Image (cartoon, rainbow, N blue to C red):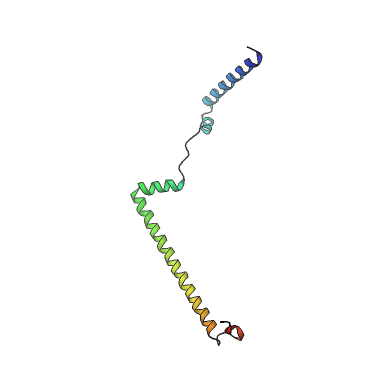
Length: 107
């Protein structure tokens, strides 16, 4: 065996011994470098909880219904505000006495 081969074998054995020593004396380091399965994504975990826990499902659906009701009420309020603004604008455009100057004749 030539010198280079012996050096490679000794280096490999030394690295293996160092790895074993580190694993025995530094378990936290070993734990940090160990591949672990990642936790499921939050939306997927939420979906699993909704499907498996009836009480949580009922709470989730109640909150969802409340959010939909709030959104519909907001949309209706915005629609009424737009209709009121449109009516006010029609009144301003069609009534020449409400605006001074030539702006009342724009329509």
